[in-house]
Amino acid sequence: MTQPKSGPKTGAAKAARIATTPDALDLTALALIGVVGSPTARRALLRHRNGRIESVTTGDRAAGGTVLEIGADHVTLALKGRPVTLALPG
Image (cartoon, rainbow, N blue to C red; front, side):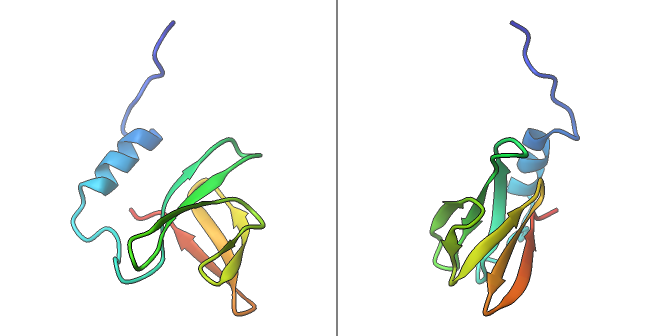
């Protein structure tokens, strides 16, 4: 079996770069730290202000709102009736 190629544009390389970048995340705010799964079955990893990590999918309740959409590099939540989009850092 062959191993998947990795390079500077792969998700793993981007995650490694972000993980080692000082102040990449605002630790005092809700943040998107990852997106996993296929385009039809994505999950977003959210980091709450208190440090708790939560895995969510479209339709889930999170951070006082509802997850509307999960893209390859962002998540959109309905918070207080308004859409709020969180993007992956970097």
